[in-house]
Every structure is written in structure tokens, then in C-alpha cells.
Length: 82
Image 1 (cartoon, rainbow, N blue to C red):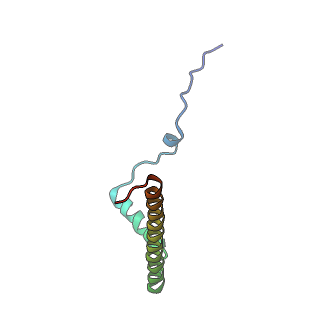
Image 2: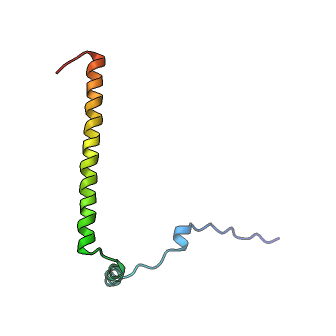
Image 3: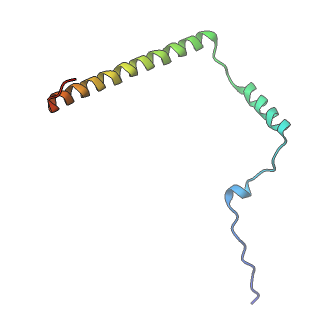
């Protein structure tokens, strides 16, 4: 029997690797992808901004309330005051 040469397994990432494109092609691809983006209207942007600001304020208040309650309970349990 002839000995067959054992083939080394090729990693999947190396098998699917494409040749590197030029810098010009890279930016051309970026431009193509940006054209596919559906940008929000001014009204939607204002609405989304309001939702984000409201959520940040609400979460800040919630964290403050939990922190204050924890501090008060800790003061009570340890019988300390500041």
C-alpha cells in the first residue's frame, strides 16, 4: 500500500478568506452600504431623542431611589448617622 500524504486541516476562516481589496474599493463599499441606510425623518429623530432622554432620566431616578433606600436601610441596621 502506498502511504498517502496526510492533509493538514485548513481552518474555516482561512478557507473563506478573500484577497484584500484596495483602499479605494473599501471606501466604495462603505458608500454603497450607507446608501442602503434608511435614515429617520426629523420628526422621528426628535421623537426617538425624547424617548432616550426620558428613559435616561427615569433610570437615573430609579437608581437614585434604590441607592437611597439601601443607604437608609444600612444606616438603620448599623445604627450610624452621617
